[in-house]
Every structure is written in structure tokens, then in C-alpha cells.
Amino acid sequence: MPDLPQHRPVLAGMAYNGISGTGVRLEALPEGHLLHVLGAIEPTALATELVKAGFAKSSIRKAGFRQWFVAGDEPLVPASLDALAAALAGKAFVMDQSHGRVRIGVSGRSSRALLSRGTAVDLDPSVFPEGHSAMTMVGHLTVQIVRTGDDSFELTVLRSFAENLWDDLTHMAASAEKDGV
View 1: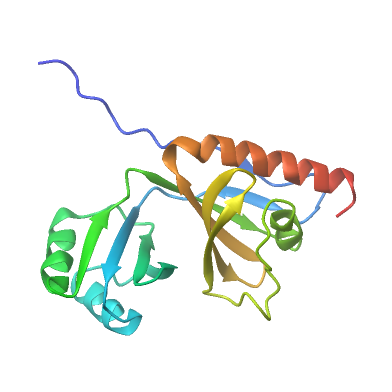
View 2: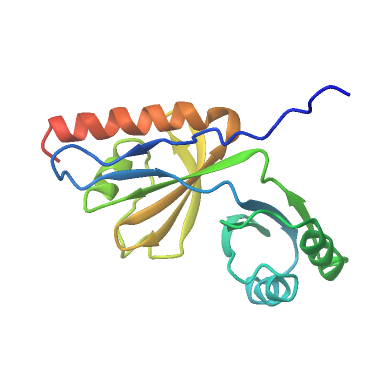
């Protein structure tokens, strides 16, 4: 029997900490789980079902009208996915996107300025508070941006574009450092 292909994290080992304290850090986040939930269920009810199904540490991110991404660092357990799908039957559909999307963390005092170089989303905390998310473009790539803290964001991109987004972010960061941002 031939060897089966093995999963390899697409951004394995990549990290960017800026140059001389410029205040930008890029991080390849764990390829845990990412579920796409579509349906007429409110986020509070979805959160309750997530806890029951074993996804208590996951976060819910709005991805469109009646659509959410459920993201977490832990690997997907098939039994938990089955339990969630059964609990949501008749209310919403759940699809595993873990294999097809990658998350990148962007943090530091200059993170908002860095991201402003690539997207038109207003990332000011008064408009885009912690926990808020938006589907947008960063350069030519479709990305979901989530504010995860005062100076931290998480970007989710299709797996096949992850290296391109990483390269774009490091080039934007280098340019910002050169400009003294």
C-alpha cells in the first residue's frame, strides 16, 4: 500500500517580529479547526451548542448574512463535528473548512497601520471593536479580518493563498518600517 499524503501546515515555522521594535508581529496560527455555519440561528444559541459539542474554546466570527466562522486552535474531533451537526439540524448547516483555510495573527502597536496599507476597512477601535469581523480584500485576496484585542487581529484566507498573503504582509511591514510607521 502506498504511503498516504501527510498534512503539512502551509505556513509552518514562519514568524515575523519586525525590525528594531517597530511594533508589528506576524504569526502563523495553529491549523486547528474552522467551521462554516449557515442558517437561521443566533450567535448566542450557536455558542450554547458549541459548548455542548466540545467547542467551548472556539470563537464565533460573523462571515455574512446568517453565516459564521467558528475558529479554534484545537484539532477537529469528528465526533464533536457530528454532535454539532446533529444539534443544528433544522436550524443551520455546518461545514468543515479546516483543511481549506489558514489563520494569520497580526499584532503590535503598528498592526492597525500595517493592515490599513492593504484594506479599505476602517480598523479604528471605535468603529471596529474587539470581536468584530469583516470579509474584505487585502490587496487582491479575499480575507476575513477579526479584531482579537487592542492591537491584535486575525486574518483568515484560503489555504492556497496563505503564502501569498504572508508575503504581502511582510512586504507591507517592511515598507512601513522604512517609512517610520
